[in-house]
Image (cartoon, rainbow, N blue to C red; front, side, top):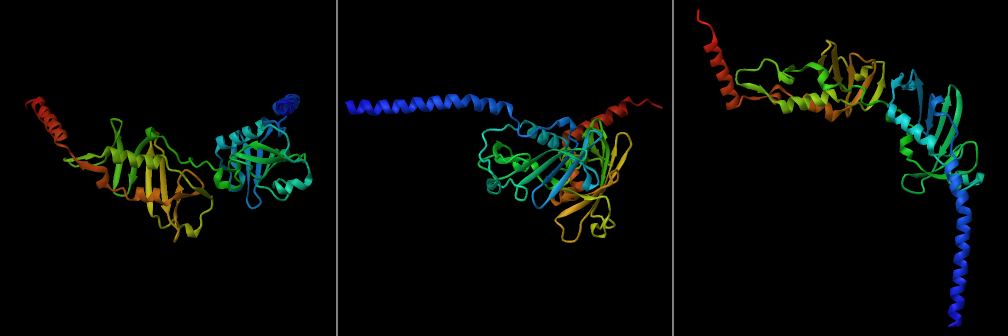
Length: 326
């Protein structure tokens, strides 16, 4: 019995010591965690961002309140993606460092030469802050190091949110149109216009009517057309724009006409698009353009139902009866 009392007393003493240690250090940890930010910068002053991954690099520049890609002929960036990244960087907090020595930096891939990402926040030409992002110790967690110190921290961050590829930052919805803003759509062999708030195929026969489901499907593909990447503002022979695979004309309600010219380089798995109101050439997914090309008049037109025919015939009869006699 005495033996067990001695063992239990020892265990209780160890537990009390551990509890005291956690209590004493816990307050410091919470204060440190709550107050220390990884990076010190003024988000409002940041007008430039450079991201490197050791192979690729991308630069973003803010002009007149909009984020652009200078190396892609000032093409618009995805504004929300840039702002979300800056917001995340501004709120990163320090925990206890997992390493403090220069020799550990290479192991965690956060030194000046080996890193997963290097992010430089700029105000004009001056760097406000630099961050190295390295290995991942767990899901959505990475090791980081601010350039002004040797301490390595583990924080919640997704490396893929800081891509060094320009195509990951472009505004891929730059071609988007509001369907309610469309007045007329012309594709080879068929014209759609609006009547009573609905798309209608032009020049319908007596026993034909518009297939509204297929028509709206076509309009969705055109109005929500997304790009894959930007090819620049200069035309090249390999684009084969003088031999278009598909041409589409869209007239907006204000009268503006947008011409779409799709072409295809030999053996390419994508189409090249030039829209008349934009300077750049774009890559567009092959399957998207093929589905537009395959839309024929037969798909957009269906036979008039008996009910519709009866209504149509009835309307004609009423019209005849109500016509004044000569």
